Image 1: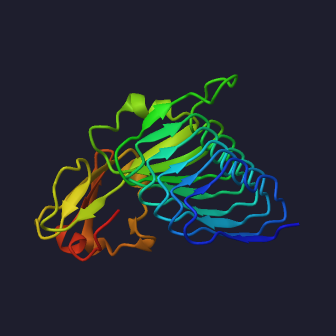
Image 2: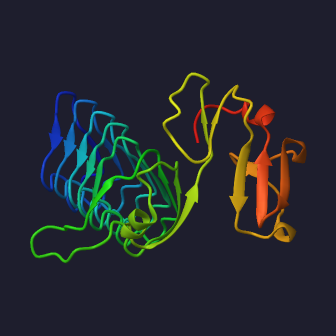
Length: 249
């Protein structure tokens, strides 16, 4: 019969199956003192529509939010390093997720069966993958049963072999990243430093005759700010326009 939960300041962990199967729960508030959400903490809370995990959390346990079938929004914190097996398995209404750059390891089945998941963004390098799903469970890819576009900022950790290891039917899309003039140029791929004077050249697989337009942040770009040429389609986005964008993807 629990419909909402507010965890008080000072609590550092949500224990094993603490609120599992609270099917009427529609809201939960977690304080910044929480550092770990453990095994099955909110497993089966199918009426929970959204959860904001505080930045203090560094690990999300196995089955922590499994079968939260009503979950349509989740904010993963910028300090989380580990997402354990099946953590969000069966969250069938979840449309998108951002994986923070802090994540260093993702285990098997993390987003298994998230049938509505269509957009995944990795904000940093490729996390280590483990197929382990615990004692007695068969190994499984993190995105088994998922069909989605996956956006990433290319660096040496993203290889074709790594992408295959995530499983699912994933369409990997290299994003254009804007960095400040004094930023470290460690990232590779499509990176533009503000003030560098360098255009961004993007080679697309589609043929030029099928080209329609360029959209950045959901807004169609004025053709004066880019060139489209054959090969199959080579887009050159001009530095003068890129310099007007905010730092980020």
